Amino acid sequence: MAKETTLITHQDVLDVLIVGGGLAGLGGALMLSRARRSVVVVDAGHPRNAPAAHTHGYLTRDGFPPLEMLRLGRDEIRSYGNQIVDGEVVSVDKNDAGLYVVRLESGATYHARRLLVTTGLVDELPDIPGIAERWGKDVVHCPYCFGWEIRDEPMAILGGAAHSVAQALMWRQWTDDLTFVTPDSSTLSSTEREQLSARDIRVVEGTIDSLAIDDDDRLRGVVLADGTTIPVLVLVIAPRFSARGALLSTLDIELSEHPAGIGSQISADATGRTTDPGTWVAGNVADVSAGIMQSAASGVLAAAAINGDLIRDDVAHAVESVRHQ
Image (tube, rainbow, N blue to C red; front, side, top):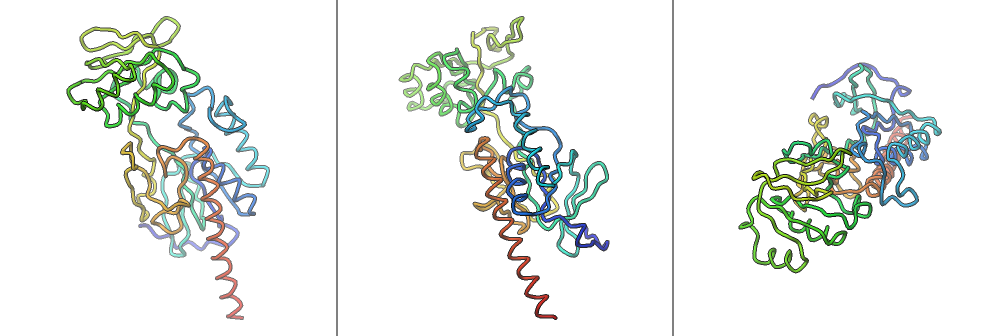
């Protein structure tokens, strides 16, 4: 780990630097701003839900454009006198004083007492032409995010993942026109077959080779390797999720598998504190299954824990200063 020996004055040091300006990062920044902490939020400007036209399931903001939510959140942080910086963090280290040294692609450098990382996750999508372009539109994964808007539409479930059958049974709540497409139906257990049949979910053996798109740029079917087209308006997939945590490689940070086996995330306690004592995580980098309300709430929870930790630090320094008077 690189060590920095440049003299840094008290005025140059932030209480908290937040990497990531999504709802988790902004939620944390708002709490810390109201606690009178100096905060800078560094945001690369690539929110995961950017392809989605509307946010769903967020109380009082159901159907609200996600980018508009972020704009309003940024304005709230600035109203407290703290900063939002557009940029990419390229490295995070600690100097000899135990301060975090955060460098941006622009060359700017920040020093902070604590670090909150809310960099989200990467969706690892199936290798099928057209999937990435339609992701978050008519290729989806989460019924709580998209189900109400596409209820009763004919859908296909892409089988093959460990939890694909559970996913199909869940999506059955939103439509009765559901086809489970699996590359090998022999891998289904007798219990799974019975469950799918009982819920009137069709099982088709085959590999999805491509997507059929109509002239209005809407999905109209999935095309199997043998040329068969299954007419559907929605394709449900089960991507693997990977936390964006590479920038923490210089710190003592551990990764763990999500309990449901759907991806990797940063290991942390209930408040988001990681195995590096001064670093917290929130949002999807800490829980790849978290929705937007959970992500925002986790940012607030982490911020409260960080502020408590800083208070203990402030008190310890004050006591030590008095003792040496």
